[in-house]
Every structure is written in structure tokens, then in C-alpha cells.
Length: 247
Image (tube, rainbow, N blue to C red):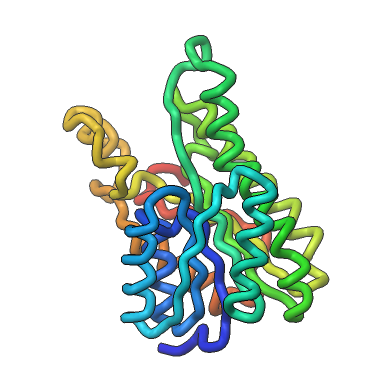
């Protein structure tokens, strides 16, 4: 499957979890993938090896995308390495859970900067390059919690709700440049964020999911690949991958 042959993608937060799965899925389509990481270069290199084994090209770039200067430099480095940019996947995200009355300003800011500000910083830096190629795709990874909220995760929910709203506004702004912008809203996916949950909490979550299981990163990645490669008449939308938890 070479549906992304000649396309260049940048995936933020791609050393693990959903971002890693997205990078590999794009590699299966023979895309060139710029793999962003924050701390774990070894994991990013392992992702790059899997992208190349799948048929794509890959390079790794360390950057804190919650800092505008670093996000801008990341985009520029990816463009210089591969010769352009066609696809941006804003996936980098963190959580810092606490109820609002106990949450510090630092915990609020850390999550909002990483999950929401970074989406603006990367899109702002990437748009001129997408425009110069005659169009492109931006996929923003939001969350079911940006749609329905959750106790103890107001900062996370607010940041992901902001990603959804940002997606809609940007889609309107750039449609006439043939740049399509969509959001993917995963539910509870088997990633590192889920690994530390107590068994009783996992059981409680499963009881709220009609399909009766958690999702996999690969299931999210396949939807991203479709939007990037085939979703030619889709923009400004939010796509749920949540097992029916929120409809």
C-alpha cells in the first residue's frame, strides 16, 4: 500500500502510544515521517525503525512543542530534512489530574500549554509550508473527555475541548488553500496513560463502554491514515473512536 508515497508528515509526541501507532501507520503508506519526541530519544528511534520497516522513511526530532520557538524549529527541521511538509498530526499530550479546588495554576498551565497551545504553535509554523505545496492535512488528536468532561480532569477536558474548537475555526480559515483540518477524539485507549489504573477503576470504565473493551492505538491510527490519505471532502469534523462511550 503506497497511498502516501511522496507525502511528508510530522507527528508530535510520536515516541509512544497513539503517536507511535500513527507514525507507523503512515509509514505503511510509504510516507516520510518526522517523529517528534520530548524526552525519550531511544523510544523515538525505535518508532523510526518500525516506520522504515513498514516501508516509509523516518527521522527523529526532539522538541518541546509547548514552547513556540521549539515548535517552530521542529517544523523547520522536518521541512529541511525531507524537503517539505504535507501532513501535520498534533498528538502530543499530557495529563495532571486533580479536582479544581486542589489544582494549582502550574498543573492547569502545564496541561493546557502541552495539549492546546502546542496545537496552535505547530499549525502556525506548518501552514506556510502546507500552502506552498498546494494544500495539506492537519489532524488534531483531541479526546472523548473534551466532549463529555470528567471529574478530576478539568484541565485535560478543557484543553481537549479547545482542540476541537480550534479545529473547527482553522478548518474554515484554510479551506480555500485546500488544507483540510479534522479532529480525532479517542476514548479510553490502551496506552501508558492507562497502564497505571487500578483494576477496580478499569472495571468501572469498561462498564460504561458499550463494546466492552478499551481501544487500541492502531484503531485510532487507521482513522488518521484515512483522513490523511483519502478524506478529500472532509474538514472541520470530530471523529469518535470510543467504543460507543459517547455518541
